[in-house]
Image (cartoon, rainbow, N blue to C red; front, side, top):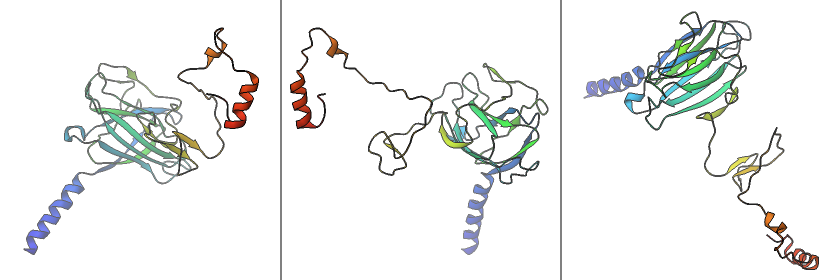
Length: 239
Protein backbone atom coordinates (compact mmCIF):
# COMPACT_ATOMS: atom_id res chain seq x y z
CA UNK A 1 0.00 0.00 0.00
CA UNK A 2 2.82 2.40 0.92
CA UNK A 3 4.58 1.51 -2.32
CA UNK A 4 1.50 2.41 -4.36
CA UNK A 5 1.18 5.77 -2.61
CA UNK A 6 4.85 6.53 -3.31
CA UNK A 7 4.39 5.71 -7.01
CA UNK A 8 1.33 7.97 -7.23
CA UNK A 9 3.20 10.84 -5.55
CA UNK A 10 6.14 10.40 -7.93
CA UNK A 11 3.82 10.46 -10.94
CA UNK A 12 2.18 13.67 -9.74
CA UNK A 13 5.54 15.32 -9.10
CA UNK A 14 6.84 14.19 -12.49
CA UNK A 15 3.80 15.55 -14.28
CA UNK A 16 4.21 18.98 -12.75
CA UNK A 17 7.98 18.98 -13.17
CA UNK A 18 7.84 18.24 -16.89
CA UNK A 19 5.12 20.85 -17.44
CA UNK A 20 7.62 23.58 -16.54
CA UNK A 21 10.25 24.65 -19.07
CA UNK A 22 13.32 26.62 -17.93
CA UNK A 23 16.29 27.82 -19.94
CA UNK A 24 18.03 30.95 -21.22
CA UNK A 25 18.85 32.68 -24.51
CA UNK A 26 20.95 35.61 -25.66
CA UNK A 27 20.02 38.52 -27.92
CA UNK A 28 22.94 39.82 -29.99
CA UNK A 29 23.15 42.82 -32.28
CA UNK A 30 23.54 46.34 -30.90
CA UNK A 31 22.98 47.35 -27.28
CA UNK A 32 20.82 50.33 -28.31
CA UNK A 33 18.37 48.24 -30.33
CA UNK A 34 15.47 45.93 -29.44
CA UNK A 35 15.14 42.81 -31.57
CA UNK A 36 12.08 40.61 -32.29
CA UNK A 37 12.10 37.34 -30.38
CA UNK A 38 9.41 34.78 -31.24
CA UNK A 39 7.70 32.80 -28.46
CA UNK A 40 5.50 29.82 -29.25
CA UNK A 41 2.06 29.49 -27.65
CA UNK A 42 2.48 25.99 -26.22
CA UNK A 43 -0.74 26.16 -24.25
CA UNK A 44 -3.00 26.81 -27.23
CA UNK A 45 -3.75 23.17 -28.10
CA UNK A 46 -4.28 22.45 -24.41
CA UNK A 47 -6.98 25.13 -24.28
CA UNK A 48 -5.15 27.20 -21.65
CA UNK A 49 -3.01 30.34 -21.77
CA UNK A 50 0.75 30.16 -21.93
CA UNK A 51 2.55 31.74 -18.96
CA UNK A 52 6.03 33.04 -19.69
CA UNK A 53 8.41 34.63 -17.18
CA UNK A 54 11.50 36.51 -18.35
CA UNK A 55 14.07 37.35 -15.71
CA UNK A 56 17.44 38.88 -14.94
CA UNK A 57 17.97 38.86 -11.19
CA UNK A 58 21.51 40.29 -11.23
CA UNK A 59 21.97 43.77 -12.64
CA UNK A 60 25.55 42.80 -13.56
CA UNK A 61 24.66 39.87 -15.83
CA UNK A 62 26.64 40.21 -19.10
CA UNK A 63 28.31 43.47 -17.98
CA UNK A 64 28.42 45.87 -15.04
CA UNK A 65 25.05 47.53 -14.42
CA UNK A 66 23.48 46.03 -17.54
CA UNK A 67 20.20 45.97 -15.62
CA UNK A 68 17.69 43.72 -13.88
CA UNK A 69 14.34 42.54 -15.22
CA UNK A 70 11.26 40.67 -14.05
CA UNK A 71 8.51 40.27 -16.64
CA UNK A 72 5.48 37.99 -16.76
CA UNK A 73 3.58 37.41 -20.00
CA UNK A 74 0.30 35.52 -20.11
CA UNK A 75 -1.03 35.04 -23.62
CA UNK A 76 -3.36 33.15 -25.91
CA UNK A 77 -2.98 33.79 -29.64
CA UNK A 78 -5.81 34.37 -32.08
CA UNK A 79 -4.27 31.86 -34.57
CA UNK A 80 -5.81 33.33 -37.70
CA UNK A 81 -9.13 34.53 -36.36
CA UNK A 82 -10.02 32.52 -33.25
CA UNK A 83 -11.46 34.52 -30.38
CA UNK A 84 -10.41 34.85 -26.71
CA UNK A 85 -6.96 36.01 -27.75
CA UNK A 86 -5.00 38.33 -25.45
CA UNK A 87 -1.55 39.31 -24.20
CA UNK A 88 -1.15 40.43 -20.60
CA UNK A 89 2.20 41.77 -19.46
CA UNK A 90 3.51 42.66 -16.01
CA UNK A 91 6.88 44.43 -16.22
CA UNK A 92 9.42 45.63 -13.67
CA UNK A 93 12.93 46.56 -14.82
CA UNK A 94 15.71 48.94 -13.85
CA UNK A 95 16.32 49.95 -17.49
CA UNK A 96 14.29 49.31 -20.64
CA UNK A 97 14.69 45.73 -21.82
CA UNK A 98 11.34 45.32 -23.59
CA UNK A 99 10.24 47.67 -26.37
CA UNK A 100 6.90 46.10 -27.26
CA UNK A 101 4.98 42.94 -28.06
CA UNK A 102 2.49 41.66 -30.63
CA UNK A 103 0.31 38.68 -31.49
CA UNK A 104 1.84 37.48 -34.77
CA UNK A 105 -1.08 35.28 -35.81
CA UNK A 106 -3.70 37.75 -37.05
CA UNK A 107 -2.97 36.82 -40.67
CA UNK A 108 -1.41 33.37 -40.33
CA UNK A 109 -0.50 30.49 -38.07
CA UNK A 110 3.00 30.82 -36.63
CA UNK A 111 1.49 29.93 -33.23
CA UNK A 112 3.56 32.71 -31.69
CA UNK A 113 3.85 36.17 -30.24
CA UNK A 114 6.69 38.67 -30.78
CA UNK A 115 8.49 40.43 -27.93
CA UNK A 116 11.13 43.03 -28.80
CA UNK A 117 14.11 42.61 -26.41
CA UNK A 118 17.28 44.65 -25.88
CA UNK A 119 20.27 43.34 -27.81
CA UNK A 120 24.00 43.79 -27.39
CA UNK A 121 24.65 40.30 -26.09
CA UNK A 122 21.99 40.44 -23.38
CA UNK A 123 21.06 37.19 -21.62
CA UNK A 124 17.48 36.41 -20.64
CA UNK A 125 16.38 33.57 -18.38
CA UNK A 126 12.89 32.20 -18.82
CA UNK A 127 10.41 29.78 -17.37
CA UNK A 128 7.08 28.74 -18.87
CA UNK A 129 4.29 26.28 -18.28
CA UNK A 130 4.61 24.96 -21.85
CA UNK A 131 7.33 24.99 -24.50
CA UNK A 132 7.81 28.49 -25.94
CA UNK A 133 10.93 27.83 -28.09
CA UNK A 134 12.45 31.35 -28.16
CA UNK A 135 13.73 32.24 -31.63
CA UNK A 136 15.89 35.36 -31.86
CA UNK A 137 15.97 37.59 -34.94
CA UNK A 138 18.98 39.80 -34.23
CA UNK A 139 20.70 39.59 -37.60
CA UNK A 140 23.15 37.04 -36.17
CA UNK A 141 21.20 34.00 -34.97
CA UNK A 142 18.46 34.62 -37.53
CA UNK A 143 18.31 37.19 -40.30
CA UNK A 144 16.16 40.29 -40.10
CA UNK A 145 13.41 41.11 -40.67
CA UNK A 146 11.07 38.55 -39.18
CA UNK A 147 8.29 38.03 -41.72
CA UNK A 148 4.94 37.45 -40.11
CA UNK A 149 2.81 34.85 -41.92
CA UNK A 150 0.76 36.72 -44.55
CA UNK A 151 1.49 39.88 -42.63
CA UNK A 152 4.04 42.63 -42.13
CA UNK A 153 7.78 42.27 -41.70
CA UNK A 154 9.28 43.20 -38.32
CA UNK A 155 12.78 44.51 -37.73
CA UNK A 156 14.42 45.96 -34.62
CA UNK A 157 13.07 48.92 -32.66
CA UNK A 158 15.18 51.85 -31.51
CA UNK A 159 12.65 53.25 -29.06
CA UNK A 160 10.23 51.74 -26.57
CA UNK A 161 6.59 51.71 -27.63
CA UNK A 162 4.48 54.08 -25.47
CA UNK A 163 2.53 51.25 -23.84
CA UNK A 164 5.64 49.25 -22.86
CA UNK A 165 6.95 51.25 -19.91
CA UNK A 166 9.46 49.65 -17.54
CA UNK A 167 6.94 49.24 -14.73
CA UNK A 168 3.27 48.38 -15.01
CA UNK A 169 0.60 45.85 -15.86
CA UNK A 170 -0.85 45.86 -19.35
CA UNK A 171 -3.84 44.05 -20.83
CA UNK A 172 -3.80 43.82 -24.62
CA UNK A 173 -1.60 46.94 -24.53
CA UNK A 174 -4.44 48.94 -22.98
CA UNK A 175 -5.47 48.65 -19.35
CA UNK A 176 -9.16 48.03 -18.74
CA UNK A 177 -10.75 47.78 -15.32
CA UNK A 178 -14.38 47.18 -14.48
CA UNK A 179 -15.79 49.12 -11.53
CA UNK A 180 -14.34 52.08 -9.63
CA UNK A 181 -10.60 52.77 -9.54
CA UNK A 182 -8.87 54.47 -6.63
CA UNK A 183 -5.43 56.08 -6.63
CA UNK A 184 -4.30 56.98 -3.13
CA UNK A 185 -7.55 55.68 -1.70
CA UNK A 186 -9.06 52.24 -1.11
CA UNK A 187 -12.62 53.58 -1.25
CA UNK A 188 -13.13 55.16 -4.69
CA UNK A 189 -16.54 56.78 -5.01
CA UNK A 190 -16.49 57.27 -8.79
CA UNK A 191 -15.07 55.56 -11.87
CA UNK A 192 -11.75 57.25 -11.02
CA UNK A 193 -10.99 58.76 -7.62
CA UNK A 194 -7.58 60.35 -7.11
CA UNK A 195 -6.58 61.35 -3.58
CA UNK A 196 -3.78 63.70 -4.57
CA UNK A 197 -2.41 65.78 -7.41
CA UNK A 198 -2.68 64.85 -11.08
CA UNK A 199 0.03 65.69 -13.61
CA UNK A 200 -1.00 65.29 -17.23
CA UNK A 201 0.05 66.50 -20.65
CA UNK A 202 -3.55 66.64 -21.75
CA UNK A 203 -7.00 66.17 -20.26
CA UNK A 204 -9.97 65.65 -22.54
CA UNK A 205 -13.46 65.96 -21.11
CA UNK A 206 -16.54 65.01 -23.12
CA UNK A 207 -20.22 65.05 -22.22
CA UNK A 208 -23.26 63.53 -23.87
CA UNK A 209 -24.91 66.88 -24.41
CA UNK A 210 -24.17 70.51 -23.67
CA UNK A 211 -26.41 73.34 -22.55
CA UNK A 212 -26.20 75.43 -25.71
CA UNK A 213 -29.99 75.51 -25.85
CA UNK A 214 -29.94 78.41 -23.35
CA UNK A 215 -28.70 80.67 -26.19
CA UNK A 216 -31.73 79.97 -28.37
CA UNK A 217 -33.99 82.95 -28.97
CA UNK A 218 -37.06 81.16 -27.69
CA UNK A 219 -35.41 80.00 -24.42
CA UNK A 220 -37.08 81.60 -21.43
CA UNK A 221 -34.22 82.87 -19.26
CA UNK A 222 -35.03 83.10 -15.55
CA UNK A 223 -34.65 86.45 -13.88
CA UNK A 224 -31.59 87.20 -11.77
CA UNK A 225 -33.83 87.43 -8.73
CA UNK A 226 -35.20 83.91 -9.22
CA UNK A 227 -31.69 82.52 -9.80
CA UNK A 228 -30.46 84.21 -6.62
CA UNK A 229 -33.36 82.77 -4.65
CA UNK A 230 -32.79 79.28 -6.03
CA UNK A 231 -29.07 79.35 -5.12
CA UNK A 232 -29.79 80.47 -1.57
CA UNK A 233 -32.33 77.70 -1.08
CA UNK A 234 -30.53 74.82 -2.87
CA UNK A 235 -26.85 75.81 -2.63
CA UNK A 236 -26.30 75.14 -6.34
CA UNK A 237 -27.39 76.33 -9.77
CA UNK A 238 -30.30 74.90 -11.69
CA UNK A 239 -29.53 71.81 -13.76
